[in-house]
Length: 258
Ligand code: PEP
Image (cartoon, rainbow, N blue to C red):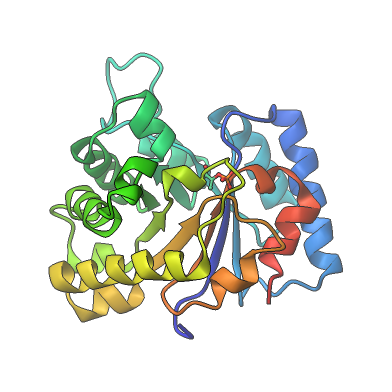
């Protein structure tokens, strides 16, 4: 849509130390300036590991870069005896614009349920940080033809109790698990089918304004060579990018897809 600013978000996962993070963000800024990237036209964000965020903040603030950044996870709790956890307030203090919640790797390896994802989204919103709420089906569900029902159930559970206004400001990432890190990208029509269904679910639950404003990203083996076809679809408002976000030229190409 013309009213929703596309977002390209690079999820680095557990890669790059803080010194390597600075190099990658510098290279990304250079490549985007070479390509005359218009940040007003397509928003760019990097999502590094927690230990890199302070360094990324210092670089981005110091050089007044238009790149935004965020975290890959957050505690559902505000503070207290939760050894090893990071709070939304801590991430707000570091200037994070986004927090990814409910990534399939968190759901799979850390048993995160929709209720946990919902609590984490609320924790982020409580600190005025935009959650990027991840949903998407595994291969078995896709093969059974249940992908829309499955994904919409995750949307309903993960957004429970949010206000219409909060949902309007959200980012939802549709990431079919079978396409993550596999090189097997969903077809543009597959991405559109589920992103449109998600928007329909948001419309049913939260109304027209929220549905028309919420940004829905596709994620799963997005590369510079396949992004344009996906971005041409009406209900796809950007991409959540894993592997390809670790190379400045490749991620720069994704951001400058237009
Ligand atoms: C992801 O993990 O969010 C992702 C989309 O990974 P990849 O691009 O590597 O498939």
